[in-house]
Structure formats: C-alpha cells, structure tokens
Length: 393
Image (tube, rainbow, N blue to C red; front, side):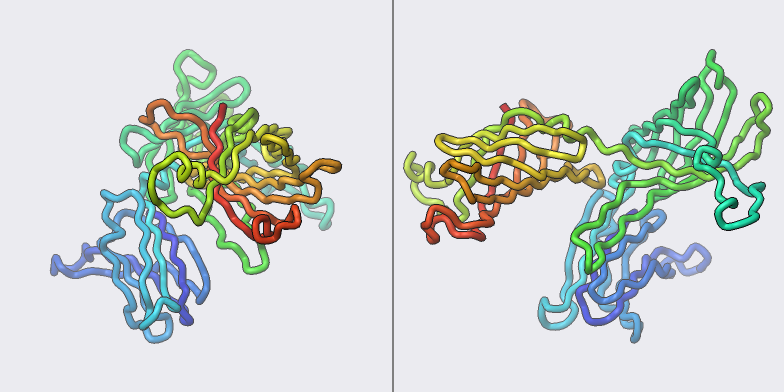
C-alpha cells in the first residue's frame, strides 16, 4: 500500500506499520516496522508491503505514540483519508492518505516509453570528457510497454512491443513494487524468449517551499534478466531499465465548443421560481478551445456582446488515474467593451465513469477576476471567485 503522511505539528514524527509477529509463540504479539520520519511541515509518501494491521505515529524525540490508526488499513477500502489533532486545538494536526494495492496498480496501468541500458563497465575513462559514451551507445532497447490491471487488482497484464518484435507480459504488484514475466509469442521471431522484470514506481516528491508545483512524470525503474537464451544472447544477462509514462491524450478532449456557465457563490436556496433559478447563474457563454500541442491551450470565450481571448493556457497531467487539469488566462480585446479585463481559469475534465450512462464531457473549476472593470467596483471588483461548469457541445 502507499501511505502519504502530512505533519502539521511542531515536532518530527515517525510512522510505523504494525503486524503480527510470525516468530512469536504469542499469537497476539505484534512487531513494528519503521517506515520513516516526517519533519514538521513536511509531506512524504511511503510504500508498505502487504497489509499491516495498524499504523502508529510516534514523536521522534520522546518515542511516545501520538496516534494509532486501524480503520485506514482495511483492505476493503481502496482509498482512505483522515486527519487528527495533536494537542488541544487544530493548529497542530497530522493527516494520512492510504491507497491499497488496487489504487497503486491503477497508477501502473497505461502506456509507458521503455528503455533498457547497456552496462557500460567496459568504457575506458581517460578524461572527464572522453569518459562519457553517447546516449545511443548506452540504450539497449527502446519499446512501448502497455500494461493494465487484471481481473485480480493485484495483477498486471499487457505487452512490450518494439520494431520487429514483442513479448506478452503477466505480473503481480506488491505496493509500488512489481514483478513481470515477458514471454515470446508463438510463430514470431520472439517464440521461446523469456525475460523477467522487477521494478517499482518512483514515489511523488513533495512540493519544495520555493516551488509553485512539482513537475514530475510517473516513472518506473528496475532491472530485467534474460531468463532463457536465444540466438547469440545467453541467459543470465541483467540490464537496468527506465520507463516513463505517456500521459493520456487529455488534450484530444479539449478542442471544440463548450457551453459555459458560472455560478453565484452567495446564492441561498429559496423558492424554486424561474427568477430565483436565474439568479444562481451569473454568466453564460461558449468556450472555444484549441490545443496547439499536448500541453498548450488557447481559444476564446464568447457571450452575447462580449469576448475574451484565452491565452497562455497549460495542461497538467493527472496522477494516479485522476483527470488532468488546466489553467488559462482570459483577456479583453482591444477596442471592445472588454478591453483591460483579465480573468484566470483553473479547472479539470470530469472523470469518465466505467458504468456511466449518457455521459457528456464536462469541465469544472473556478475563475477569478484579476482586474476590476467597467468602473463599478462593487459589482466587478478584482478578487471575486466564481465556480463554473462547461459541457461539451
């Protein structure tokens, strides 16, 4: 399982996983496994093998237990989140998110760009510049790896394909670690081949204090062994590998027209007359979006009598199977009634439910007015935030 631990207390804390001690004659005896230390104000992720019976949080200095958690490790719940006070007030607290194997496996599912590498032990090193081999000399194989969750959520199946060949993949997942067997395909040049892969998903880095975000792509690292010889390639050769996840084609969903509405955050439920319902919706218009590249976004926002140019948009891939997000800036057009306006938008594509009926792509998020306009500061003041929903035509 994957555990994300937030420490909002003034003391360093230590996370322990606890399970039954298999070497004790006492069936109730438990043993602790120290997972790591989280400094004050820090957020770290830990991968714990198996399913422990409980989690314990202890003070780093006094070793006193400040919290014991049993509900979050229940394997029936693929995801759990909780927070607890440390002391009398909520000024000091800790938070835990637990993702079981099913959730971690979903992070492994998808299309990966795979590269295995030669072991450059024979490179002569006669100087700092001459010692570096070219990148193409180090790469043994470049391929596409496509793996998906099996019927059992702790298993993986898929394929690795390269120009001129490929292997069928079947494997298992334990936390962030995986073991996969690649078998050659009958009646193809790889018939009889067998390779075994062992690796793990690199955990996410916490955001540094001086960074606005963490720019990290899901990555698998590990090694592969040739289990059976073929041709002039002997069994037993081992090579390291790196596989970088290709982000889903989120931007392919974005181009086109979207019916946009933003909503009054101060709306109070009252009678359901048409007038009251209209007061809920602050503005309606059409988003017209284009994606020049997989990470860029631009377009226009149009409504009766007004326009904004949507510029400098970016798309950020989601993690762990969650939808990608986007940010874009709307600016007024010169020589029009919107000159000088600026609105900033942040949102994401809603999830596509596996068993959903009549689903329509939708964007949800919020918009902030960055600059006041029209000389009516009480109505159009900077800083006002509205929620929005945009449904694709």
